[in-house]
Length: 227
Image: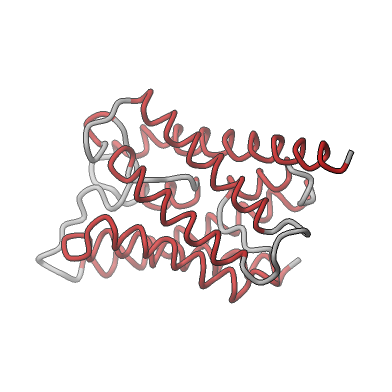
């Protein structure tokens, strides 16, 4: 179990450092497309790097979704999630230290997720809930399908990474894209003003519900197919 937890720690660490780091440090140069690609690339690279050790979750919503889909043991859910959150917070702390070392980069919202006044384009809470639920549902659906025993071997990481890129392209304007409670927690701790902590409940609860629903639906589809 220790090796699996370390793999989840490093995978989530890289996701936050690479994805959120690109948003905080380089969004003005690379734009939404660049940030979306950065998130997709972090997952793609770590799926191939450590996915064979831990399964490559790097996200509490993924862990819950795989559990709901019958692909993961309930006993390991909490240890996996704790490792993911610790990895995400460490990455955010390092990113915070980097930003503090520059007079030209402001902490500001620190790539935190938000709705209303803190949505990149002013989308309200209902839009945020719908977006985070649907995007997380589809992310888990992609993961479950790409890692199915009947899927083409060796291509799961590519499908998952590109899927996450597409999800970011769709939802960055709405919520700055969470679909990952660990990623949201890590940024909310360092965003200025405390507003992100007040909205954090949505970016913890909704992705987890979306992931669980996807797991249940995919499991039902597979059961129906086998019958």
